[in-house]
Image (cartoon, rainbow, N blue to C red):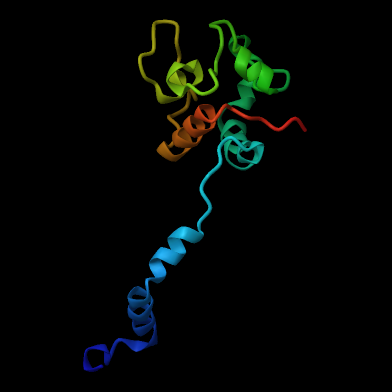
Length: 137
């Protein structure tokens, strides 16, 4: 008991939790991400697209012939062909543009004013790998 003197209540609680294996309880209580759920699109993907893409590729604006207004238009792509290949982010033109990998002469990195964060790129990759589900309403 002597080694715990001076730790305070917070420190003692942490030691107790570690001894009881509470860290495993916390880890197992977190729900895994289900990128195939249309709710994942609403909560995670749509905000990224809204903040970085739809100004130029939504509503009345379809630069490059590309609209992001529906799943069908997301899949169809623009003048360069399909933008998303569900299940295959590595084959998806959208991922090529936003990761700015292997861009050809006519390709422009997207978004044009700066690269997406690694966290945003991971969300898009997970979503496409899981089938690129979009809610119908």
